[in-house]
Image (cartoon, rainbow, N blue to C red; front, side, top):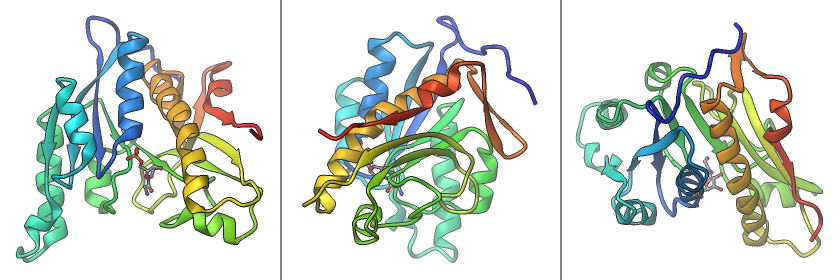
Amino acid sequence: MSPAAPRFGAQNPARLVVLISGRGSNMQALAECCEREAWPAHVAAVISNRPQAAGLAWAAQRGIATGCVDHTAFAAQSDPRAAFEAALREAIDAHAPDLVVLAGFMRILGADFVQHYAGRMLNIHPSLLPAFTGLHTHRRAIEAGCRLAGSTVHIVTPELDHGPIVAQAAVPVLPGDDEDRLAARVLRAEHVIYPRAVRAWVDGAWWLDGGRVRHAPGAADDLWHFSPRP
Ligand code: GAR
């Protein structure tokens, strides 16, 4: 596969649908970059699986379409996960997304759902993958004695937190760090790296080739970030 010609412009901006479960600060960073830097892209909708997610209120206040598909509402169905994912897919596809952006979306997604968005769904995971897939990444990094921690933007594949890596940010683990301090440092780096990864996708500056991400000349330089010791 080779790089595609840029598909998006001012007249046909990329439609980003962002999935959140809570605070939504990565979604905010993305929406703000889109606006401030006049990207040929916009956040078409923000959808949560939790009605009380703070990010939903922020998005609504900015005039961004919002939606909620509450996963707890499907508990009585014979296959609650399948029913939830069918409803979620419908809610997302109503906004005709070019790219689905998971930003602190805390539900594991099944293979059929992932397949439907194959190659056009990104996630940000708060570790330097392939280390520390799953939960409690900061606590596990501290307990393992890591000197560096960070975050990874990757393409979503059916295997949790294992898809091809698009971008990474590294931060130091400092003496006296606890989970919250480290999480805050990683989050600041996420707000740099996630918008860059999405912008580079919009610009056609990276693409998937045989399970690996390839970059246009020079484009890879924007897709890593290192926060030096404060
Ligand atoms: C972020 O740190 C993100 O990497 C993490 O949740 C946080 C969401 O923050 N995602 C995961 O753990 C996914 N497995 P935000 O709601 O402020 O963007």
